[in-house]
Each structure stands twice: as structure tokens, then as C-alpha cells.
Image (cartoon, rainbow, N blue to C red; front, side, top):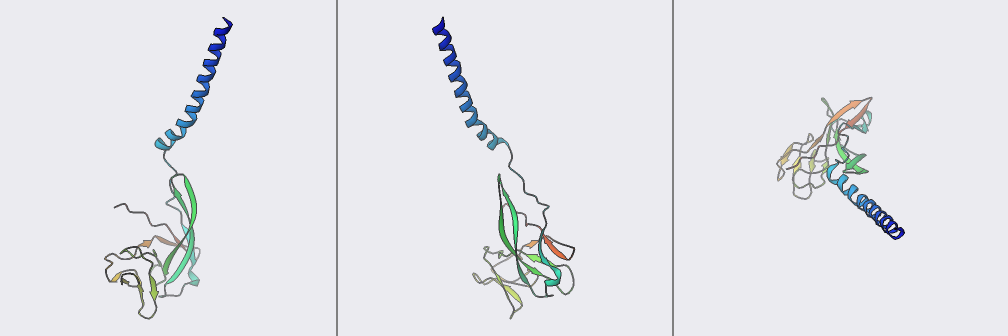
Length: 160
């Protein structure tokens, strides 16, 4: 009888250990598959420039840091935008990538336009296409002004 109690004890102990190990392995996988990751804060506005520092009708490249959420991983990444304060109207902020193939473009003071050096696309000061191969205007960040600061929101990703 003592031997049978020992066998029962060992069997139950091993069953408990194996169950604990199995739960420890399966629970994170179950959580990963069925639980949703953190969602980004789409309403987050980022201060990028003081309006008094912007020269009218002259684009300025501004650097800023933004909070990025990718599933369960959060990080801060550096980003930039071209900010234009027109003589009249609202301030605009343009994404720094050409809409043709995503190349970085720059402002050409001599011609008063944005130029993409890779494929020759040219854009007006408001981001409109002046010359292809780009067929779409430059992407714009949503903007608003608060307390003399220009605030922008991240451009939503478009799945195509």
C-alpha cells in the first residue's frame, strides 16, 4: 500500500509539472494569436515648429520625434516634414517622400519648386505635381495651430 501511494504521488507530481510547463508554453502563444496588440494613438498631435520661426512662402524642413506602436513594441523614431507658411491661408506640412517611388526630395530655391533627384519629378510649393513621372501630389500631414505652435498628425497608412 505504501508503494502504491508513492506511485500515485509521483504520477500526480509529474502530471502537475508537465501541466505547468504546457500552460507556460501555450498561454503566450494563445495570447499572441487571439489578443489584439496595442493600437496607435491616432489622435496624437506632434508640435513641429513655432509659427513665428517660419518665413512666408519659403518651405522649411523640420525634424521631429514620433511615438510608434507596432503590435506590442513601442518606440520613438525620428521623422521630418516640409512646412510651408503661405502668404495667405493655412500652413501645410508635406511628407518628405516623393509619391512616385518614395525618394527624398528637396526644395530648389532657384526654380521655386520641390525636386526629386532620382527620377526628375517636380512639385509646386503646395505639393502639386508640376512634372512627372510622379502622378500624385505630395502627401500632407493633417495640421492645426495651437498656442503659436504648428501641430501635425501622422499620415495614416493606406493598404493597397
